Image 1 (cartoon, rainbow over the protein chains, first blue to last red):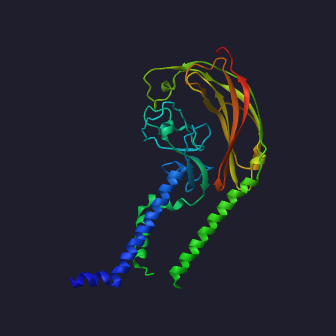
Image 2 (cartoon, rainbow over the protein chains, first blue to last red):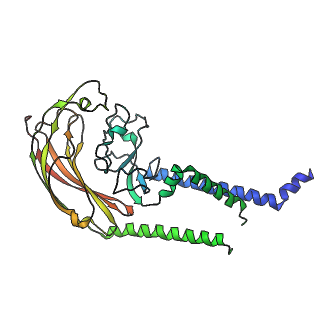
Image 3 (cartoon, each protein chain N blue to C red):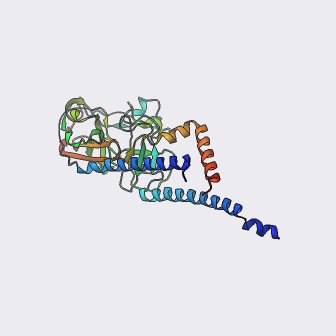
Length: 165
Length: 181
């Protein structure tokens, strides 16, 4: 089976395999960093992009928010990100939370589930602790115009596979 | 090693790193600011403490099975504060709000936001305002008669970039009337 050993020994194959392994390493490192960030901040989404204008002028569309979550009970005034689809029931001592966007005239009850008048601690994804302006626009553009996302991913994939180190 | 691609890549990476560093330093510079804010609230209970039918009757978005009567208070407030020392060059705005805090048998802590405002710059940070409560003061029950409560002024310093700061001044010793009016 000479042709098998010849193929494996060939430099061309090894270079291509190296590039695939490198790509895999890059993706794994990114995943490790993301999961690590989730551990450190205690939030399932430690970095979020502001999509709506409901907190202007404090947080504009396209800003990036850094979230942190702890077991401390939510108190009035905290800026939180919530998800109404979470349905756990661990706590016996519950907190009842009503939220409102700074730029909205009414509170967020219209956004809650039908018949739901309060949020609970388990609906809160995290408290906003820091902000980085404008950086989130890349994510917004890729979400709202998917064609840009495909172009960027396609170009990146091509670049990684064709550049010879 | 000298192609356009490599040079563009190196340049963009360097630019982004420098930008991130500048944002971090801007945020760190806020630590040098030592704020000394002050606040004072006077209030007068206006038409208050009337038990009313639960909100489900007023708003067809909510579907409630039983009507409940919850205590509600309406009050007129004189709020004055000097928050000028909170502003730095890295401050985008200060979000300030006034909350009533009290204890009931069912809840160890109730916090109701009565009024909030956004202060866009240092000039507006020293203010005096005469207003009725912007948000309804409604209890989860009928616990408000004769209730002792604190008025706490909270503020959030929201930066242009970096870490946010939140603090408060507690003003204890307020008490609601014993009877409905």
